Image 1: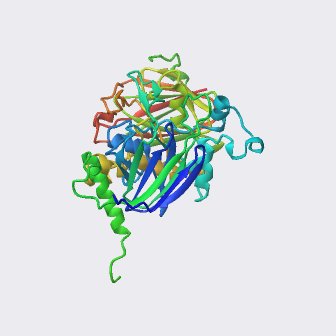
Image 2: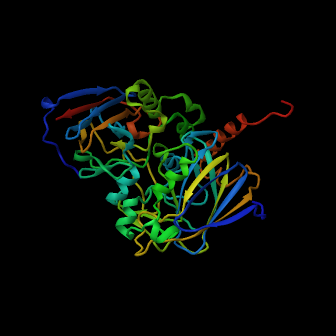
Image 3: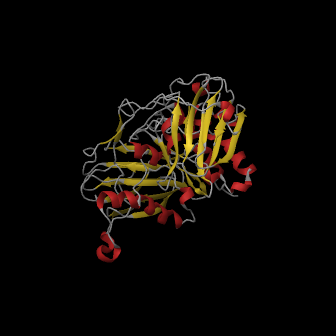
Length: 245
Length: 212
């Protein structure tokens, strides 16, 4: 990955945004103060029906947690992006979002008139607003990522949110293997037990990726990822514009 | 949790055997109870539910497992929609545990999981895409093919964050029963997967029974 940062910004906690990141770019997300959560969904901008698929991502790599070495798969058997670095160690993709009701029940209601942009947005509505910018709606929301949030499962299947896991300065690098629409919010994880609405900022940086080598760690994490990369190569091949054509 | 049903097959108002690799798509009314019966054993039934009056409201695996604080589905589980509303409740279960993390098979994910050469093998998503296309009255499309339940499938999560596809814990004659808490459309793919033990490498029929 290049040392040059093309672009850097910080998204405050409890907000939402979206951007297209093309193949060849790496997105670094940094938990600026500790305790952050990034809800994220991924779509193919050339065919919005192709989207991040949490079940395929988990079963193709025989994992419940996501961390370094894992790839984030679309429902079409392709790799949107690879987790090439991760100092957090565990990211959730099964617990979904806060809703208006969850936020109100846990942290109280805040009117816009009184609190303006310090009101307490929820993850579900944040996604709805963001995907609507691309003509999508509630049918298009899938199981999302919750980056920086660790939720483990005991031998009976019970979920446990680990509030101590998200440390200040932790970061994750997502290397994009195909052009991708990235939709995200910084609303709290729905299992966060914090007494007050956690409003934790996230810094993002965009860099150029290094060329993906044959011995690349994510590509070779498991035989499934080698095949996922092959599918993605075929897709990118189909989008090439031949020289002289 | 194992809980047996008191309902008698003879009193069912509707019965349909769903062949291996086929789909079932039919509405049921609030208050009715549906049984999905594993006729020959070790058969996965990949299932989705929609609000009949607004199919944009549908079964949500995330909301369901988060609300009950547990990743496995069994008797007592209330299936929640993406709007947080109760859709159905599991009222009987002789299998004891069902998966909702593993999703369905698709031709594309088969290429990743098994081999690129597997791309033309029949898969659950193909059954669902045919179902929503053949049943235009429901107004659904690929956007409605979402994160499902795998009845009769066993996908244990380990405390260190692993995920395994274990041999099924179902058997011939095992069933799960759900009572609808709203009018719902039931969409089942009777899984055609030949590449892993979810169907014991031998897809077989299931039966759907409905009681008022």
